[in-house]
Image (cartoon, rainbow, N blue to C red):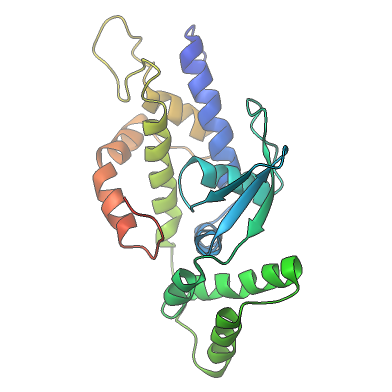
Amino acid sequence: MQTNDPVFEDVKNYFSFVLRGAFVGLDGITLSKIYFIFLSGIELISQSGQRCKVLPIGMHYCFAMHVFFDRPAPPWDKDPFVKIIFTGEHIEELLCAAKTNIVACMAAKELAQKLLEQNGCVPEKLLSFLLDVDQKSKPKRQRGKHFYETFFRDFQIVLLLASVNDTGLSITRNPDPLYKSKNSLCDAMRLALESIGIPLSFETIRSIWYKRNELKRIFQDFPSCLNF
């Protein structure tokens, strides 16, 4: 669907680019494993050498995903991030989750390999944990569709919708006759998701937006260094 509204088209293209970097080709387990790796602490380095510590959610998370998978930088970014550094600053958060969560346990092993490649060594706490895990039973793997698959998608949709609320477009369809019936942010999101192979109806996206407070409460229960 094309409109004559340049703001709507810009928002749609923005959503599409960010979502493509964050989700395309990734299943729920992979998404949650990356979340736990990022949770331990990452830093992004821009083309000019600027450094930015990143938490595993929000826009910087999407930019980190682009760098992590070597995907193109945002076309509007004059100083794009080009390198990701694993700091291990919050490694206790990951190790705490890894005691009971099989995906976090998988993430701990992958992080150890990345830190070994990056620094030539593995932090003592992480190494000790992995040695201990090898001697004991691992957390059980969850069967069926992974919870994080829809949670991360829905939470990112909410964050993106909220990030452009100053565009003049209504988040849901506005009855004001000055607005076209399809020119809401939820409609732009629907088209953006459709462009990357995630078909969600307008009604589904609107319901995700309406349950944003519930999603926020769920996220607060996650192992996280974030403070809302």
